[in-house]
Image (cartoon, rainbow, N blue to C red; front, side, top):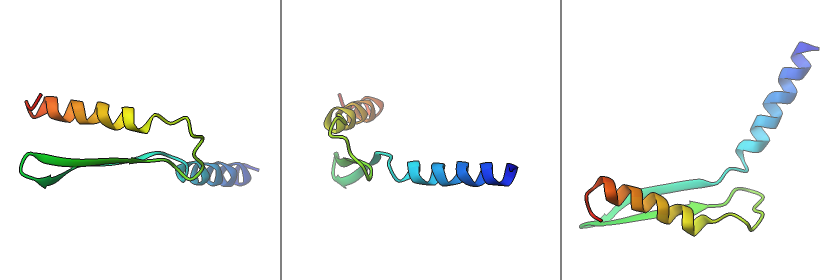
Length: 68
């Protein structure tokens, strides 16, 4: 019974891992230029505020670089 529960838990974790939103960046793209991207998971709902999230991350990055 314990093995069965562990198997179900691992299967659920594996399925959910494919549904996460991923961020790439900031990656250098030239002098004082960086690129960031954000991608929805496997089953997007259409409610993910991707642009707002990536702009917030970019703002934090720029603040840390004293570029704001």
